[in-house]
Image (cartoon, rainbow, N blue to C red):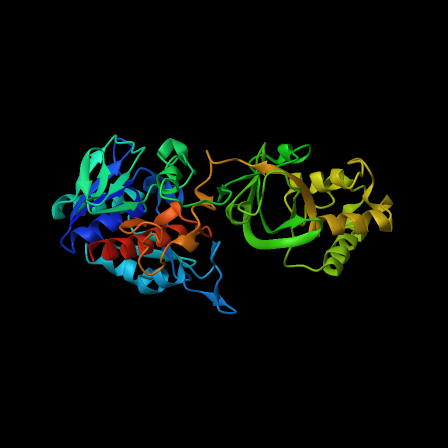
Length: 404
């Protein structure tokens, strides 16, 4: 059995190892000068390999994965879950640490994972051809033709459109489209969000903890909590990454930041009154009014946002102005201009429609012997190790089934 793997990322190498260890002859075709380059960038270079909440469900649905068929990733994730993944690497001596459910190699470097996978591929006899951009796959009664070589099976693991400088520029979708597959509209995911920066560019580099809500037509689409960083283009940080896949070109969205999520409107109002009425705060100006509560610069921007002059005496603020400050602290709204695009995205939302693939085997329903795994398919996970887990799980399923 000869199997060609198109793409040498996490899913491609996993499929290759699984197929090879089942007795097949396996060749990886990788367009970059070496395999696994994108893997090195995951988790800010630390490689957030998986998450203990991979199988978390609500109302019978996996809550950390999104697809044109929401149930599609279930079989692979249950049959090769986070514990199975950690066990496989543990057998090779890799140690892990867990931080808030996220697993990282104990070495704190993604190269640990990549080096182990590359070495394992070499040791078991997986052939790797780098610098090979595959633009066509042909099929006949004898099998598949890839670069003039005959193969019995082909596994497409080319990734999506995110981080094109690391080899995933979206051109791989065409390999599956040649066989009648279709993709839905793709968009950047797990990336920064561009917002109106009229005021926020003054906060560049400042970090706050907030509830972050993506809204459309005043309706909350999704909320996430965590550290948000202001930048000259807008905002970044884990909760922003989680919401970014919901931003669609040509549609209007807002981001709402609850800058004091632990406190109610009434509690914040009472605390502002406490500050104003404190005898030690005589001659207090609006520019310092909120500094006992939040970052001073953020507080000043909130005052400006409420159209209150910074030089206003705090004890001259009207009840309406105080109410406006409280409301803004609980809902600091920013107009969304878009995301930072595929160049900065960690993954791609959307992709090849999963309805034409068997979720037990990752085999095409349109072309026998053709398989796909990883990001090229329309399966997207949350930030936090979920996408790498899908890459490994789907790679195992494809690698096993391709040998049968």
